[in-house]
Image (cartoon, rainbow, N blue to C red; front, side):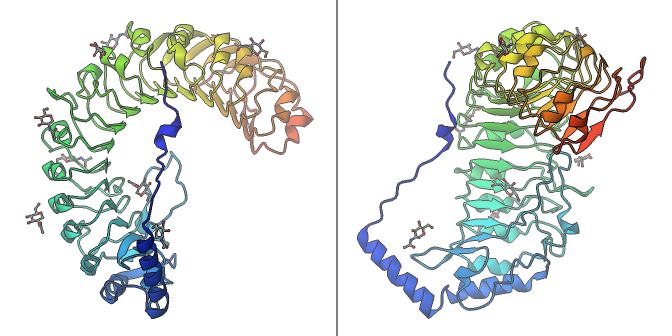
Length: 497
Ligand SMILES: *[C@@H]1O[C@H](CO)[C@@H](O)[C@H](O)[C@H]1NC(C)=O
Ligand SMILES: *[C@@H]1O[C@H](CO)[C@@H](O)[C@H](O)[C@H]1NC(C)=O
Ligand SMILES: *[C@@H]1O[C@H](CO)[C@@H](O)[C@H](O)[C@H]1NC(C)=O
Ligand SMILES: *[C@@H]1O[C@H](CO)[C@@H](O)[C@H](O)[C@H]1NC(C)=O
Ligand SMILES: *[C@@H]1O[C@H](CO)[C@@H](O)[C@H](O)[C@H]1NC(C)=O
Ligand SMILES: *[C@@H]1O[C@H](CO)[C@@H](O)[C@H](O)[C@H]1NC(C)=O
Ligand SMILES: *[C@@H]1O[C@H](CO)[C@@H](O)[C@H](O)[C@H]1NC(C)=O
Ligand SMILES: *[C@@H]1O[C@H](CO)[C@@H](O)[C@H](O)[C@H]1NC(C)=O
């Protein structure tokens, strides 16, 4: 089975511009540089938008003066026509990380505050508008309906903006739209909602749709509606209060869909009854936190493009068809089965993962389940592994030497099992390791001095074991370690994680 490389994601543009056009462009350019930049009506529209901004702690609009608006920060013009085509005022927040999904843009002094002025309607050639992560809620905190009249938009990003009220169906007038991002806006109790999303079917070019955290609980047959937009490549309806995905669709038009995120909904039905299992083009499927149960469907076995499969936080147990279903998923890189009711021997689980993907797998999340048995040496064959989470299971026996072969491992978390034996001293090949947590097992012996030589190791937790003896100077004086925990290493210590 062949896995396409990332090359396929790279688009190469070759543009051939006729000579006459180049001359024309150069002429216009110099005219703009000397004669006054942008088109006066559009400049006025931008200044009027600026008037609606009440606070700009990040000084984003500091450059918005002078004649040539095409040189203002966040503004781009077509270099042939001089028209404003792009308004990119995204508030680039520091990466919040996975632990902090929602960012309070209205509590961030660097956000733009105020309103989105209807003056923007004068930017008749605007194709790209990104106002994401700002607090531009206007008087009523609703998405302004007039955005639906910005007919040339191909890209609209209002993510993280904390709007409330109904999603305006007027957005269905943006018939050229390719990317629509309204997601991640929730930080309030009155979250944005929609009872009818059929206006989306008026967007025949739509490739990317994110409406995560918008309450869609009263939308009828949302899969049927999305199935009318065959151009879609990405659908993200995470945390939309959807209560079922078990609608049956006679025919699947979504042949281009690569990414489907339905995590954090209330599906609560058998996993196999979902509508999407025949989407063979999927590369990314996230069904985390949905109370799904039952057998994985045989059709999953045909999703041979899958790279990421997230089934975490459901009520799944490891059924007998498990290995058979996964066996042809040769592109799999990330598998998350954490926080389910999976049991059985860890050896059978690992051996059951598609052999054609062993060397490709980057992340395995099997923590918070009921796996038993001893971690086998074959774990060393998963040579690309960067994260291995097996914490909070019932594993016994020693840490296998094969694990020490994983030169790309950065995160290893085995806490909360009943592992015994020594902390391996032959760990010199774990050169990428930054995080090691072996807490709350039954490990014995002393702290290996070799751990102090892992150059990148930042966090080391050996607490809650039966380890004795001094802390070796190599570990004490390690320059990389920022967090060390050796507490509770007394015999008979009982873990309460
Ligand atoms: C016009 O802009 C495009 C990209 O927006 C750029 O590739 C091209 O070189 C520019 N042409 C001139 C004459 O500046
Ligand atoms: C919209 O902006 C956010 C950041 O503000 C970004 O994470 C997201 O990928 C953008 N959406 C699209 C479709 O580009
Ligand atoms: C935009 O959409 C609304 C409802 O979806 C419709 O009533 C209105 O006529 C449309 N406006 C334009 C300018 O097409
Ligand atoms: C979503 O809307 C439904 C119906 O209006 C409501 O009962 C439910 O509480 C809302 N869910 C959330 C998470 O706001
Ligand atoms: C999509 O599939 C349905 C059947 O589920 C069909 O009725 C509809 O015409 C198709 N729509 C498009 C846009 O292809
Ligand atoms: C998997 O795909 C093959 C070939 O397209 C097809 O014959 C088979 O029925 C599919 N299996 C399932 C369970 O959908
Ligand atoms: C598997 O899960 C189902 C439903 O969640 C449950 O009825 C069944 O008893 C479970 N089987 C095992 C072996 O745990
Ligand atoms: C680990 O590496 C050693 C030495 O390079 C090799 O002999 C052994 O077969 C490897 N083990 C696994 C499970 O890959």
